[in-house]
Length: 145
Image (cartoon, rainbow, N blue to C red):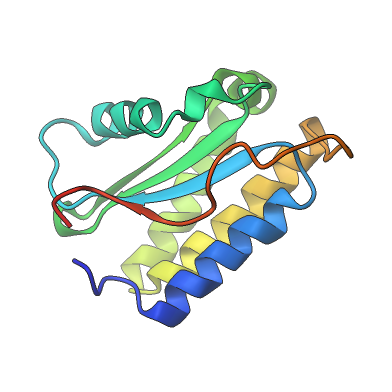
């Protein structure tokens, strides 16, 4: 699991997050989970809370939660962004990721999804001069990784 992403892939993903967040007050995180103990959505929601993503001022955090060994993933958006974009947007992002994941191009799929999510966040939560990066940009990993 530690080698799921190469160092180059990790760097690309983190840079994609930073590029997206330069244009929005929204926050994007990527998390890899080694083992699912319950439904992927429930695990993603738990991780969202553990990472403090619900603590952003505008409630505009987005989590890309990936469980490679289980071949499952979820995208969770906080209430601020979810109210703006609705369920269809998240389904489109899931479909995009699924297409890339089926081809084995995980890092590229994540980078593409981050760019689209970043653009959507920018539309509803544009970057303001007083904005601060409320959450780390690095990829988080389950403690079992």
